Length: 470
Image (tube, rainbow, N blue to C red; front, top):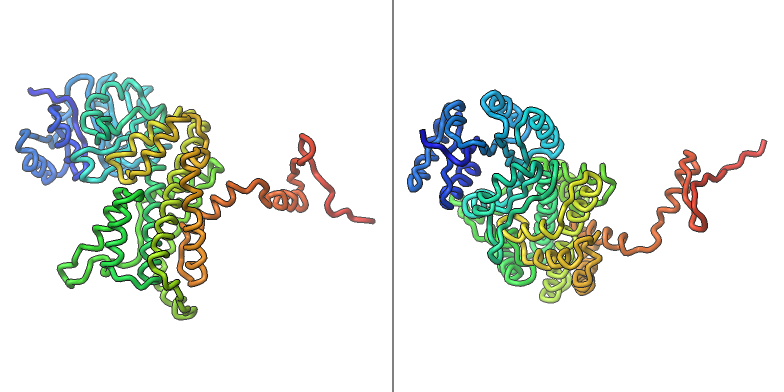
């Protein structure tokens, strides 16, 4: 029987495209799926490489070289555990399982511990880039078992996206670090999408721009410092016509945003780690708020308002570009700060320079700006916060006025800009030497004797705020 270098479990679009990518680079690969349609599709699209799949898990396992390399691309959660349970009795010690779905990092930690006790290598790997990325070059974030990564390194580097000839994949760190980094990547993605949506809303409902005008502006921005995959996608959306109605499809899509949970996970973890990422949090909340369509319609009728936007649209567009650039920097900054904190808390040993480097290509949040971010961490690998880099500080100083002006107009005209607003207050809070938190701590000590620290001496103190005279 022919022996294959790697086997894929789950031959949906992502799994199938990854196999095709591997085959293009000369690797002998196969797949397994319970659905005969998936196996047939693999054979049809993989004719060039004579790709074949298996409907029998036992035959699939026996077809793989030792140590076996098995990639899972199945829905996160209980299904991953179910597949692993089926695999275990068929595997030998030293075999490798790679979970490439969007699993929660705590599940990855648990699975790695359980499988290690049984002599099996396991690691979690985040993959970004969607269907096209999987087919022609994704950004990949593998973390966990170093032995397993070493056995996969050549394959992963071959199929990854390339920037300046360098593959967009690296060993992220121990434990569940790979899935953790992918989760934060998705949180940044949420923030960027919300910022683009708010920019669209300002142009459509504030400036009264047509879809064509909005498309032209997004396209223009994508040719400058705001160049990114998401900007490119957004500009393209405004050219897509709905065959059913003849209208632009964007006008036919209901304004209720869905999610698969990774943004929420990022927000939850940030609160566990007590590290604020307000732009990402507001992006998650905005999707949730959008689902209350009936309520929104009723309240729109109850609270009508007029909109008076500045007449100089050209100047306003320039300010919007500045505001969006500032907010995009802040989205990355918040996500990377969370990675910095998680690395310290969970001992992930994250190299933020390498993470910024592999995000430059293949992934959904790839952007020209990431080259500057990569250079910031390259110059100072111990950088705690992106705002501390001198080059980034120059960019923030140059564009902050645009964000303040956009915020002023949006707030005065009742246009919802939660992501922009949280970005501005996050920045203003971080650059404030003395916050009013001293009052909060005094309040806590007043009613709950929670104690406080003093400004003039070390130690923990409690004051008798409300002395009762008997």
